[in-house]
Amino acid sequence: MSGAVPDFSRGLVAAVVQDVESGEVLMVAHMDEEAWRRTRDTGRAWFHSRRRGLWEKGATSGNYLDVVETKLDCDLDAVLLKVRPHGPACHTGARSCFFNDV
Image (cartoon, rainbow, N blue to C red; front, side, top):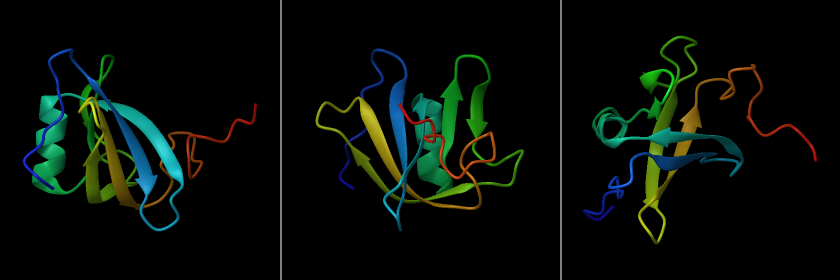
């Protein structure tokens, strides 16, 4: 990746998490500058929640997300993390958070 970084000037940015093998969207969370830095430094997905603060996906469950590829959108206000998941991504135990049909 080039030296581009997300634009955190308005606070958190959206982080879309996608399985690198299947292409399935697993979850959406948010990142602040610290979550971005830790993700880049560790190779595992970190996020920021207004309720929980900084958190590493899988730290409690063991369902870590190994980051294989990172992309930014054209406006630099959304992050795409292509990952290898270690188990379900959703806190409900589902593989993906996107299981509710409309």
